[in-house]
Image (cartoon, rainbow, N blue to C red):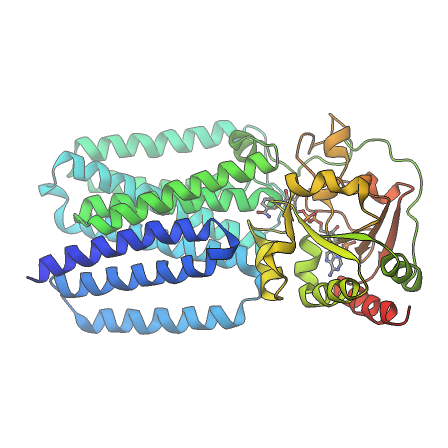
Length: 457
Ligand code: NAP
C-alpha cells in the first residue's frame, strides 16, 4: 500500500515539476512556477518517507532541521546581488549529496550491482564530484574570494585533457572491474580536481553560463542517482534539471554571441582593451537640473537598467521617477536586455519587486526599433549591453552580441558612478558620443535626486 502511495506522490511531483518549469519560463507566472516546484518537492519527500524503509528517523529529522535553518538564514540574509554565488553554493551541496550517495552505494552494494547500474553509479560520482568543486570555485570567484579573472597557464588545455582522460579511464576500469576500490576512489579524487581545473580558466563575466552548465551536471548526477537507487522521481527531476540547465546555457551564450566551447576554453576577460575601437571625443557631464529638465519635457523616455541598478538597489527609485514622468504625460518604457545584470531575468526580478507593471517592460527585439523616436534613453548602471562596439566593431571581444541600441535615441543620459567598465572590461564608445551625457553618482541617489528635481520643474 505504501509503495502505491509513494509512486502516486512521485507521479504528482513529476507533473508539478513540469508545470513549474513551464511557469518559470515567463516573469508573469514565475512565482506560481516556484510554488509548484516547492509543492512537487514536498510531495516527493513525503512519498519517500512513507514508502521506503527508514533506517534512522533521528538522522533524517536532524538533517531536515539543519537544512531548514541554513536555508531560512540564506533566504533572509543573502542580498539579491549575491544570488548567483548563492545558487552556485546550492549546486555544490546538491552535487556533493549525489556524490556521497554514490560512495555509500559503492561501499554497500557495488559487487552485486548489474553493469548498467554500476555505470550510472560511476557517472553519478564523477559528475557529482566535479560539479561540487567547480561550483565552489565559481561561488568563490563571484564572491571575490578567488580572483575573478581567468587563471590560465601554458598548456592548460592539454593538462585538462590529461586530467579528463585519467578520470574517464578510471571510470571505464571501475565499470568493468567492480572490486577495484582504489580505482573508484582515484576516480572520485580526479573528478574533484577536474572540477577545479574546468572552472579556473573561465572569466567571471562567463560565470553565469558556467553555473547553468554546472546546474545541468548536478541535475544529470541526480538523474544517475535515481538509476542507482531505482527512484523514478529522481530520474525525472534530475533529467528536467539537467536539460533545462543546458538549454539555459545555450540561450545565454546566444545572447552574448559566444559558443559554449569559447566560454569553456576561451579564457574570456584575460585580454581586453586592444580590441576596443578608436574612441574619439570626450565624456560630457550633465548636472541634475539639466537632466531633470530633459526628462520633464520629453514625450518618450526609455529606461535601460543594468547591473548597476542591482548593486545600487535603485529599482524603487526608478519606478518613482517613471510614475512622476507618466503623471506629466511622458510615455515611459523599460528596455530589458536578456543578459543585463548577472543572472537571467535579473532585471525582471528587480523591477517586479518594485511593482513596475510587466506591461511596461520590453524585450530587446521589441524596443530597439523605438529608440530613434525616443527623446531620452536613460541608461541606469548598464554598460556592456549598450556598447555599440558589439554592433559596429568586428574586432571587439563582444562583436556580434546583440545590444540595446540606445545610441540611436535623440539623447542619452548615463547614470554611473565614474569611469568603471562593464563586466567584459571593455571601454564603451557610447559614453563618448555627442548625444550622450553622463550623470555621475550611485544610481539610487541620482534617481532619488532626479525625482526631487523633476518635481520642481
Ligand atoms: P555591466 O556591463 O557589468 O556594467 C555595469 C555598470 O554599472 C558598470 O560600468 C558600473 O560603472 C555601473 N555601476 C556599478 N555599480 C553602480 C552603482 N551603484 N550605481 C551606478 N552605476 C553602477 O552591466 P550590464 O550592462 O548589465 O551587462 C551585464 C554583463 O554581464 C554583460 O557583459 C553580460 O554578458 C554579462 N553576463 C550576464 C549574464 C546574465 O545572465 N545576466 C550572464 C552572463 C554574462 P561604474 O563603476 O562607473 O559605476
